[in-house]
Image (tube, rainbow over all chains, first blue to last red; front, side):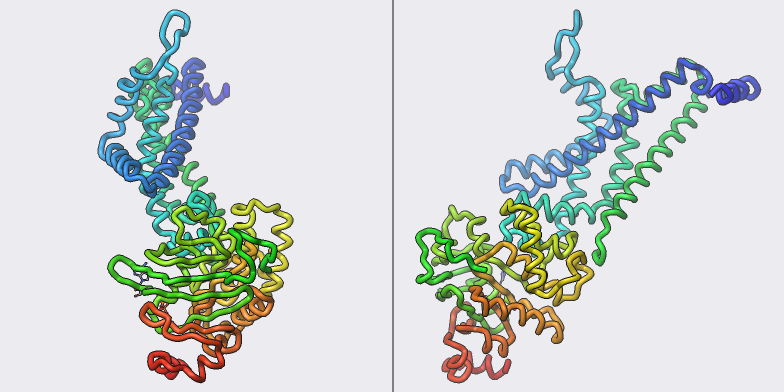
Length: 246
Length: 256
Ligand SMILES: Nc1ncnc2c1ncn2[C@@H]1O[C@H](COP(=O)(O)OP(=O)(O)OP(=O)(O)O)[C@@H](O)[C@H]1O
Ligand SMILES: [Mg+2]
């Protein structure tokens, strides 16, 4: 660590490239904290968006017309408006309407900026996931579903045990794509001051005037994260492959 | 296989196991079944034959409520299928169905296909289900193929898994809809043998088939349908030799 820091200190002294996060303890701690916040944010958004997608795809097949129209409206809204506007809307408009509690002299919202980022990005990506899952569900032959119902499966049971497992395999490539997009979109959380990587990098370069250096760090950081996500998804895809199918 | 003690809605084995009365079924404006009536006693095996599009599949699908009906009555062990408050699970516990295209769950192995429904639908004990499944595998002669996925099995093997899967629910009636139509001639036989054994063990069976030789041998009663009505029916001996209706005669002359 010492050597590592010395190298970057040296680099700064000799060439002017200021990777301050690698030799200054305060900036380093900020950077590490941002890494964790980003990873937590991404994982929470991924999970939430997939759950929304599942529920949405389920609701799209509901008998009730109100639910189906509601779903269509939800999808159109989130697909056709900028995610950045959505995140601001969630935080500043809905955030003001939700309850807060007295945290010793000032009002603290139950849902903070991190929570709102997860909710809004989750719904944003969830709208796409809904469409992706639906196309997967439509690819499952009606006859397979009939076989399940003739064995006594309820609609919910046949979804859980037959339709989703098959649909999921069909739509994994598209899901993969959307989740990579979501990962990149989490940077928008800087707009509501979630201390994730984008926000922190911004703070660091404001304090140290090292925009190009922090940009390089940002790019490499996200390339690395995307690579990990893609690798995990591919492993998953492979492990779910059915012998003699597809 | 059939559990003799099962008595629902006051049904007794003396009454028909399946009783269809004046069944009408339309798809939109197209009336596919125009007043079909038939009865199947416990342990009986009936075959439904007839030209393509005459409504055979529709008829048999109505029996386990895969199709809704417009008019008439279908009773399975006293359970009225055309009841808006029908407990579908109750019906499907009584009725097993095998399809032309097997319709196995491709993401599950053969043995899992057989075990899934008893575990998730009937909430039976896993070990019990496993034991039962094993005996069914033996019955349909698929020892050694338990852990193969449907995509790794031949059509005939898949169809036998499908039969075992339906039997795992311990149904009282089995429906077969042209279950050998998608198979090549060599594998047709292995599936027919399985069905024949079932019928001989006393399973109540309703079969839609184009295999006349098989129908002749296995069926207690044969129904000939054309354009949504039963034109003629009778035990195989009289049916094949003494068909009266010209439509039946024509159909038989083409197929035999
Ligand atoms: N889901 C459906 N919607 C509309 N029409 C249908 C539907 N299912 C069947 N039909 C029509 O009902 C008629 C009877 O079809 P059915 O499948 O019962 O015939 P079948 O006797 O089983 O014929 P095959 O021997 O070819 O299987 C046909 O004219 C068919 O086009
Ligand atoms: Mg048919």
